[in-house]
Amino acid sequence: NPSGPNRTTTAQRKFLQEVQSLPVQQRETYLHPERGPLPHPDQGPLTGIEQLWLAGLPSDPSQVPFDDAQTLASIAAKVSKLKSPMDHKVIQRAWAPVKEYHDRAAATVALRNAAQSHAPIPSSTLGALAEAIQAENNQLDPSEALSRANQMIGEISAKRRAARDDALMKAREQMTAIDDAKHARTASMRQAAV
Image (cartoon, rainbow, N blue to C red; front, top):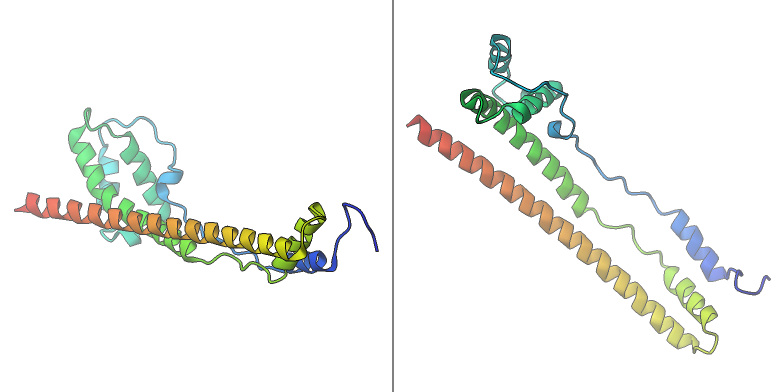
């Protein structure tokens, strides 16, 4: 049985085996059309072809193909509100619902990711950690080493829960902000139509 600072105890080997067998939690990702818009030259006034293209986009934002959404995002980022105010309005009228749709989809993915629980702390952690604490300070009573290990695990668990709760709160706030912005946009459109 090896001795010295590099020896591995039975509890530590069990812990390492449990950690290696933990499933890796995959996080979902969502590619938003704004995240990588296609390069678009500095946009002047909309051409007739662009206006036809805009008119041909589906009215349901969920039906706008991703590459069209990227192009729309790119044009929306380039059209100057000061240089071409009407074109800016036309683009924003087309882009805003598509952006909201993708913002909501991205926020939904963020919410699902935040809601995932962390991998459980292996049951062998307490024993392995107590032995490691005991090995670092051999004057320490084994029950005190166990108590310190238990406290450390409690602190780690509390930090993990707090981080998860914080991520959930931020994701919910993002969803609310998206819904509020959509409501404000549609309300102003209804007022403008009156």
